[in-house]
Image (cartoon, rainbow, N blue to C red; front, side, top):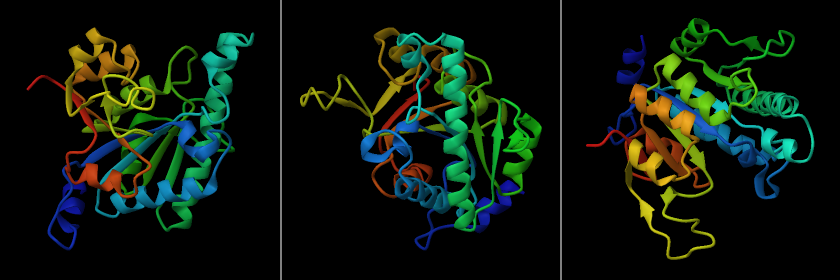
Length: 253
């Protein structure tokens, strides 16, 4: 059914999506807009519109969202909160973001389901891999919240794990910069952007793409990662169509 959906939908100039099923990783800070905290509903609607455009091409879209616009577990732990408790707080924050995105998508006419790793049946469905895949096959955007359900694991690791579980072809890591650089381009104007990186190169050089657990999981299962700028309108669609923007992290060619 998925292949028929892809074959049936193309852009006016004949472009067809490169990927059949993608996992989009969004930071919680992106939902906070310029303030990096709370929810900027205009930003949420903009993100939802980009997802709608991709989904409208017949691409199956799963989304993993962070909760850093409300609380970051590691940072809260530094302020004296028990680390496990702080991480659970962060997981609950991701659910708030997920529900906001689900509502925006549904208001745009796109069916969406929020699934959580921590059971809260009055709010969202529990994450069950086969059910998540079935939602994707039925044309629903699946939003995966509450991390892995376990403390000490980041949403990067959640994204890698869920991508492997649902057999996503690529992880699209949407950030506030247009790729991976040799240094922070904000503080180092001479920093050089990478067009492509090998998994081992990222690990050996300690380049901040995803945490090592997530990166190793992607490497072991040959799931490529594309890091790109979320703030540029239409970039999610460009990546899905195969346009070479951002930085591709994958196996050595």
